[in-house]
Length: 381
Image (cartoon, rainbow, N blue to C red; front, side, top):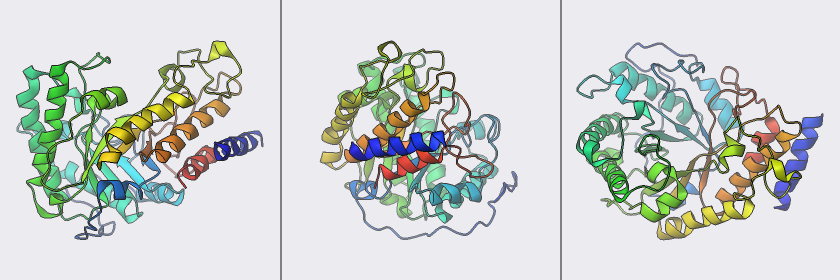
């Protein structure tokens, strides 16, 4: 904690003072990634090399296309900037079904574009976590939709896995994202939990069946709604054909009123808060540690590594002094996750202004909040 408070002090001091090639149907030659080399690392061993991570959010999962949600096309220069800042991994959220035909066949040009962006990250020396993101919300864990969703999930992942089957083990696949019943955020029913666990098994089976390096590739599966308590209570680690190559993924945005609710009047957090009316105490530092300890005990200690696939707190410029609390929250989460063995992967949706949480200018790679980037990196050293 002393190091954390030192970083906060440094942050306060600072506060005071390859272009896109087009939808051509073929990937641009950005330098082939290292292929063929599988280092026989377990998921827990690999996780120790992956912190910290960063999300290329609101980009390849944007609908209907890459720039629809306000971000420019991803570039080699951006990935280079992320790596140069000290990040070791990039999570690349992707929509696939929205780029597939009525038979769930993924567009060749879209597969080529995603491949291009993966190559950018690999060329920069980053681990890559490639997922199937929200994608219009078709993956709903109900018995009524189970058969159709499983068939679609298997077909999409078979195509994705075949495309990347010769890539080395610096590429990881993540089967889904925040899977839950639309509009419901409480604990899952037994039906919901069972169907979600089935999605994870379908994903693992589909990838392993494609062979090549996918027979041993580390795969990431998700807890229900990526909620820690729901995951601990309900997640079943899929059966696998190779031991110790699975990771579990959860996300963390507690307390919601501080991190992502821009209409909230809660703008302070943690033991450094000075105004009780501006603070929620239920998700304090001790709570953070306890939540991540659950993931360590239930998964990491049993050979299943854990990805903290998303976390971040937005800026709240309307409150003077808020930045101190935002930085403190971000660094506390990063440090606690890393200390407990989780891989912290910061959620960056691109925007960097008020009510946003971006770390990099997507056009230039510049850092609007260098003290925060530096702090995140130092919390994992």
